[in-house]
Image: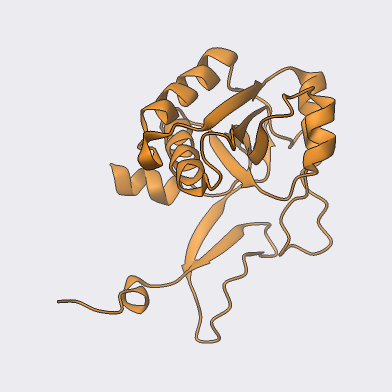
Length: 191
């Protein structure tokens, strides 16, 4: 079951508009993240849940999508995310929250997948503008924006070729391919 969720848990960049995650669903995903491990149990993360159409448009305007897909400006109308969860950190609690951010993000994505939704983690964010548009507390730092919704594209895993190229691509049918290194290449020792 976990492996199935992991294989299905891809970065979806195009979304169907229905069904959309409601606030109760977003809250339940944060509840899962709250239960995830935390480095030194500092629990430095906070979350902003965005489901309102106007606020979703504000968030979308601060994002850059799919760096490897040159010439693609991101999802069009009718393909945009139907919700966001923004992960923020409190530097007074932890100045290097990367472990917590990763654990929380993966937990949320797996929970979303289990509910029939998909997501995309976006780190290319105009943080100052987003902070201003959503009037977020200045003492918190935006770590990651998670776009969520019902997947509106097919994403397939493939193996990294002999050239070592890890860049994702889309074929002539607009199927999105994501190359993954093989485990045997990643295991460097066995004792």
